[in-house]
Length: 551
Ligand code: ADP
Image (tube, rainbow, N blue to C red):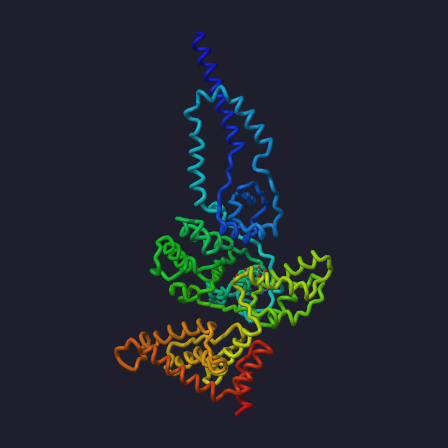
């Protein structure tokens, strides 16, 4: 009997000890999932973060449903702190130590008995957290749309883009009307352009204007976060969007998923891409779901994505020109008292994207605030401009000398395009918008003319400065690729079996021709250059008028 009682006592003690241990474990364990800097960016972008606590060595980020952590050195603290107050907690707060001590003492008796099991839960937890760090950042059922409150009036510049998208808004508002007339709309719209020009923003504005749910996914996110379940995620995304139709799916950085198949193959990515293609084929445009996607590298995309019935509507967004920058700046400064000369500021910010301008205005406002000024002045903008440029390494920004070189270069291209009748919308210091050729059959001379335009810029700078510059690199690479395609694929070689050096010979010949043109039409090129320096852009009609006046 006493033996039994003492055994019962032991079991009871062990039980209590175990309970206390589990209690301590639950209280003290860090059940946050570890995420990467990139995943943190996603959370910020999706505006899911509710609060941020720093308890070294981690930063804890809480969303409505989850707790994540990221090593402090892996997070962009400054950026985070700008948006959210970061509470700092000491990593070993005294009450934790006291609780640990108390629980350990109480658990003392039981510990002996359960010693062997003691680490089991911890091990399991380790394995669990390892797995969970690869698991979806917001669990699978969290394919949730946001209600966008961005409107077209919040989007400055890019008027043509807005115009292009207005039909889609109308369709999303009244899908029934389109259905009854059996009008097909594109299922997929691809927004192409460099980072920060507002691809995501304008897509959100479409959702906001049409008042439809907006499903955001980033391609990189699907590939990196949903490891092993990209295809399923895509499927769920489409299911959810169809359920709440009319709606918009927006896939940011689609190139992360939609790179050429076969190119540096990755089965996981291919499966995801195939799923995306299947989903896009599997619904009718009349179902009221519009898929929008963004990329800055359309040439990287798998052709299958660009076929009819998929992303067959393409909208290019380039860096804002001077007038657009002025509009963007005045939009951002609408609510801020300022005495800045916006026209001069727009002129001084060649190469800034809308996102960069937004940072510039914020930093300038901070600068004014620190200096105790109520209104922003030119001085504030001057003080932070360099910092913004170096902080956002991607900003193309020209010194006066570089502007001059670029003006010569682009004037050469504008001249050649106008003279040779290669259609373009406008050519500016930062962008060349040749019109897309949309025909099945192109003539050799049409294709050669496009090649000449690509070579004309360098011909102009060589003549003016007797020097070559790196700004030609992109055009030259394109010229090389197009010349090769022309000879090897389009059957436009002089010989039936193309020789290896044929592209080189062709380009040389065209280059000489352009050098000659730049010499002969020097006056016209200078007039175009002057307009580029003064107004940053030239439209085809304007260049044509210059040529007409001279001849
Ligand atoms: P992208 O998707 O092209 O990389 P985003 O749409 O994410 O660029 O733009 C980043 C931020 O820049 C937006 O959140 C918005 O605040 C601002 N922005 C971008 N384009 C515009 C614009 N045209 N007008 C006003 N603000 C803009």
